Image 1 (cartoon, rainbow, N blue to C red):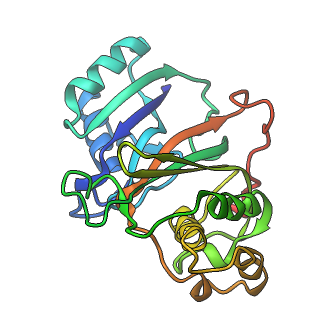
Image 2 (cartoon, rainbow, N blue to C red):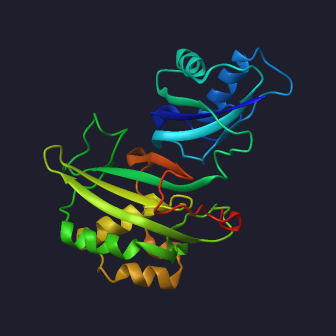
Length: 265
């Protein structure tokens, strides 16, 4: 068996998330069907393992996954074959042969997420599937003060949705930055950390823009760390604005090489 690692992009609009589900169209489900068809439906069936789950409507610029294939195919040929068989709302950006002990999920050392916010007064029909919407003015100085407080190791219990299976809510954020695209009336916020909890980025963005628009004091970030109460964080921003931008593995970022301990996943 040859282990392949793939890096892919996808438009999450018409997917019910990454994880395979009965009677639902998912990224994992589509990939599993394709690789098994390529291998002529072997028994047992080939399984696909992603770096993590993305929810329904969430997009990816560089999601990663691995699978074991029974035929030794050059990586370039695997890359071309997969791209010829997957639907148009997916794209394989890279395929490579990796060591047999590589694991797309358990070897992750960090992830980078992008959140895009349309700042128009009304929702743009051409952006509605690819951005969240925030119609209030944002003070970038206040927003950046909020983001600065999120950097570091914290207990993010106030920023995780119910249904999380993580054994610990402690995570480390290495970077939290914002960019205002005035020409397109769009605010872009990025987070890079060693791991993220269920809906964590969407909740973080909600708190940050409320601070940026004066609906919360800047000091509320520290209060939320202390109270550990999801209800206090209030809103979860729409899935449509969220993009998994990059998945990091050992050697990708020498400054932050440590992967998340298994007990925290």
